[in-house]
Amino acid sequence: MDNFYNDTPDFKFHLNHPLVSKIVALKERDFEESNEYDYAPQNHDDAIDSYEKVLEIVGGICAETIAANAEGVDLEGPILTNNEVQYASGTTIDYKALYDAGLIGMALPRKYEGLNFPMLPYVMAAEMVARADAGFANIWGLQDCAETIYEFGSEEQREKYLPRFNRDGATAAMVLTEPDAGSDLQSVKLKATFDEKEQIWKLNGVKRFITNGDADISLVLARSEENTSDARGLSMFIYDRNDHAVQVRHLEKKLGIKGSPTCELVFKDAPAELVGKERFGLIKYVMALMNSARLGVGAQSVGLADAAYREALKYAEERAQFGKIIVKFPAVYEMITNMKVRIDALRSLLYETTLYVDITKAYEDVMRERSLEKEERMEMKHYAKLSNVFTPLIKLTASEACNSIAYDSLQIHGGTGFMKDFPIERIYRDARITSIYEGTTQLQAVAAIKGVTTGVYLEQIKHYDSQVNEENSELQKILQELTSDFEKISAKITEIQNSELLDFHSRRLVEMAGNIIMGYLLVINGQRDDHFSNSARIFIDLIRSENQEKLHYMEYFDFKNLDLYKITHPELSQE
Image 1: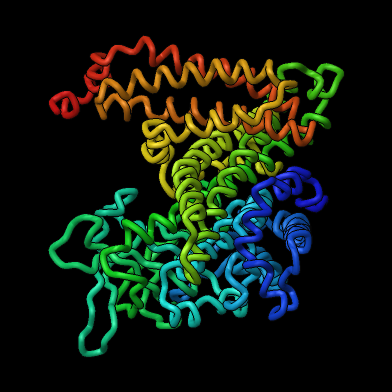
Image 2: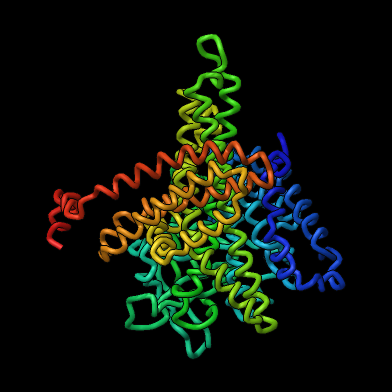
């Protein structure tokens, strides 16, 4: 099987984005650590070479080990033995392969035994791991928790926990959801009480749907303030499994991502350490953690979509019907081409978003050592604003497209795709969760609509428009027309100043913006590499019809018709 890095030229293309030089310079502090660590780069080219070599190692492990084990892991799954989760045998082999390669804690500073990688190569690695096995991607990807400890924990906590990731191969979990809370995290009830006698926090309560819940190091959201019921009463804590104070009561039986254990946890006087300040658990720390997780689901979705596309292409090139291979039928090659084009667009949006996150995080890290100059502060604010609305956009867009691509891939397989004889059956099941966890598509629309109402998307679209060369004027004109339509309908909806109507149309508005953004990114990418030019032309044809459909619906929508959607639900119509 091909190396997953080498068989995807897009990775090298995105590693050479013009913004990467800025990110590397900020991340490496003028390469001062090259004198202290023999694996630290000495200059920009050295850093890129290091990223590529590591990504090639990841690509090899994904192809030779993780993908090879994926079917077995799906069948075997994890089990619960003596209050401990036991991974499927293939999962243990997968994790050991990445651990042996030093790929746990990739983005952590070298001081804590990490590689000090920016988010860009880390997200690329996450995409490859997800392409190999989306369930395993959850286990490996939860090293994001280490980033949260680094960003908000004390120095004592950093020194205590962070080296364990690379040194010991520690696993992690984000312990947020509860049986009665679901997506409404401000309703969390797990209680945190400070024991004055022992001078330690203790946790009591139940958590449910916790991915990798029996992890070595967990970040737990709990209610630390008595007589509160909202987000202001919540704090974040670190729980160490070595304390053996949490019972894994149940392992969920799931439709997909079966190799990833999903646990119900019971905390009984579990000792824990407060992260940062009390009452900032949800409004600051979990929001940062969730943003990283949503970017991770974006990568997972692109990886799954790529896996589904490759399975469809492989099958269509081998399967013959009516005297010829089915890839030669227009109905089939249209589907396969559209898959590839959408993946090009999604990957462009994924890594554009990652660059914005990278610059923001790099400046935040610099602030630990010195004050930012005025120009740096303005730049950080600009990219933070972009990352805040692009992150829910990529999560929404990629997860929905991932499901659609998996659906079409299974359709191309016909009846055989419905059987367990081909990987698409597992990929199809795995894809379904991406638009649900870490915030459903509906919640992502609520978060992303701020990019519409504040004008951030429109401002960035116009920035992209200024980068289009004259040779692409034909495509630019179409995108400008789509932008004009988007601007007019956005203004029309927001000027009504009715939050219910805005929520009702939020997904349509966000998806219109996302389509235009991806169209521009493909055109701009095509100016650097012809590989994207055909994708740009096909994608823009697709989104022109998609956006027109959304536009037409909103233009002719009668506000009074909102009541019709409630008519079969008396409790709604009485509000």
